[in-house]
Length: 246
Image 1: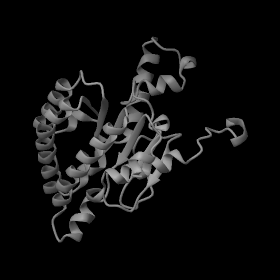
Image 2 (image 1 turned 45 degrees about the vertical axis):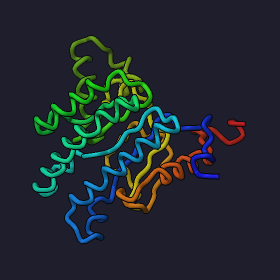
Image 3 (image 1 turned 180 degrees about the vertical axis):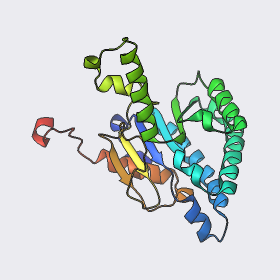
């Protein structure tokens, strides 16, 4: 029986988030420049998106570029942005063919104009697709997101359209980039690093975390299925005891 056949469709996570890490190290192992790893990482994105859609995942969020990544060498950032534009152009038809809707979270206005425009065009062209939503985290950091949410809420209190006593978890959630997207039940990080790197800090509060030593360009469908099977074998208690769940 294959890994895919072992997955219980009744216990699928609705939303999976992935930190795609290890492109640079993978390229170094091949004796190539870092951008070579990013280029090969696109194949892993394609394979993972296809696998997630195949088994019925509804939301897949992929951490593509953090606000901290702007501090990388200028040549790498430029090459990454060019790769992003090319990939969005190349993959939009495939997204439509498979009824996958594209969304993006992060400080999108900080992206180069050509990249921002291509992204917005792809989001518009796929907006009616309903099989799965692919969310790209671009120029994203969770602290930036939370600060923005606090500012928006504070402005509403100042404008007297919201009372401080009314602020609760839902208030904050609705002012995050992920408003109207369910929190991830499963977060996967590749490359053997065991941290979440300023990614979805609020949303990952009760997520199951899965770490693999695979570098991102080597991550394939079977690796996603293995992570889901691991998730399905865990007991999710949300602060309760095992006896209460029974």
